[in-house]
Length: 222
Image 1 (tube, one colour):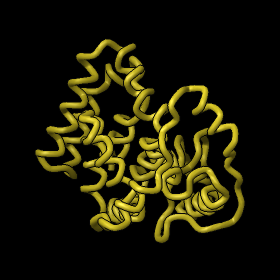
Image 2 (cartoon, helix red, strand yellow):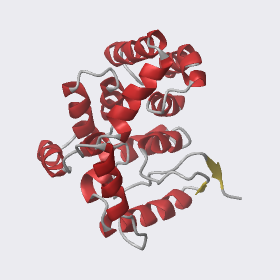
Image 3 (cartoon, helix red, strand yellow):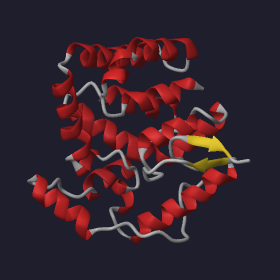
């Protein structure tokens, strides 16, 4: 289902080629038929906003939202494990689950990076994809709320992913995630220090309970 790949594309850094292809992205979303008119309207508003904006301004806005704010990190395990050992062990198992579905990672990004997860979801059956989203739906719902509060059209992407989940987000879990996410750094220097002091370590552990999340680009194992 290309809907997931299209949603992932909308969450990536807005390079010139992405902006040029936004009409095609929207056409894919409409053709797949997984999203209703309300969600498509929100995604169209994001596409229109990106097309109308100066590219440098759009890129700076993206960096300010997703790269400089830990509370809006697109690395999903950041919101439940922080940068401790638990996140690393969960991601190691995540990679194994990914391979279980016949795919090998072929990217430098960490496997809990949301646009890469969306790439994987586009490669598996829709029922499997919805179960994967269900395992992460509370994190996605928390991100959706934060983006909505910031009045950014990017909220429409998270709202669409939550809509595609095979189960609703647990309200208590969402509140716990919102309460536990670390405060954003007050400066770029402070943010750099956070990443330097909190490396991710990998090892065996648990990941999402029912299905893998995955990294992009992916290819089937021989």
